[in-house]
Amino acid sequence: MTKYELPDVWQWEEENSNRGGNRPTAGERFEQKLPVGEAPFQLYSLGTPNGIKVTIMLEELKELGVDDADYDLYKINIGAGDQFGSDFVKINPNSKIPALVDQSLNPRVEIFESGSILLYLAEKYNKLIPTDIHGRTETLNWLFWQIGAGPFVGGGFGHFFAYAPEPMEYPIDRFTMETKRQLDLLDKVLAQRSYIAGDTYTIADIAIWSWYGRLALGKLYEGSYEFLNMDEYTHLLEWAHRIAERPGVQKGLAAEYQSLAE
Ligand SMILES: N[C@@H](CCC(=O)N[C@@H](CS)C(=O)NCC(=O)O)C(=O)O
Image 1 (cartoon, rainbow, N blue to C red):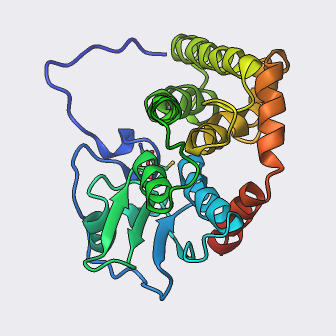
Image 2: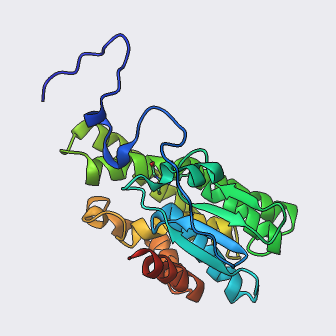
């Protein structure tokens, strides 16, 4: 590998932009008309760990008897750059999935950031978030933890383990250590309680399972189960399997993959 010399001012070159057509600028790149259906919720998403949080949440709400949690699901192909189209950018100026529109209200409510979407839905229906101050705060602690910690796994470990052009020791060591620290943290928490925030299933479980549960089950990056020595996280594994069996979770995964597979 040639030694990298830091330039005085970094310059963007298209061939160095990695996957997904990212550029160092935000904003819309082309005119786009997104489809709009009849259901109360319009979901623009993809079956990634952040994307599945929302279909799981909506399916869990339906399992709990919330009839108006119906949604239309539209594929945003982030590999093809759909997230930079004008209609999508109006909903989420940050150009990332998932994005949700609640058109049961007038004017319609536009929601982006998966944590914000989970909280919006939990509060709207008063489900999957405890109402007492201690339980609610602990749920939010872990919800915010996931949003902050997840990029070390996805953008750090996952990127360098699975997607970088070649294995690189320094970033792999750095992000594997942090990922294993996070897995150990969750394992220790789940040794003490049945669910992430206490003794009930909440939006914190949905957010954390979609990343760490899927990682624990070996569903995110090929070969990572062995590489991370996942067998040592017994409490995390037990929780990950238990959550995977929930009908709402299974329907949430099926909804995402069936509708987005075309
Ligand atoms: N913090 C955001 C992260 C969303 C995110 O990173 N989404 C990815 C897919 S999992 C994406 O849309 N990437 C497209 C891109 O970076 O251009 C959330 O939780 O919603």
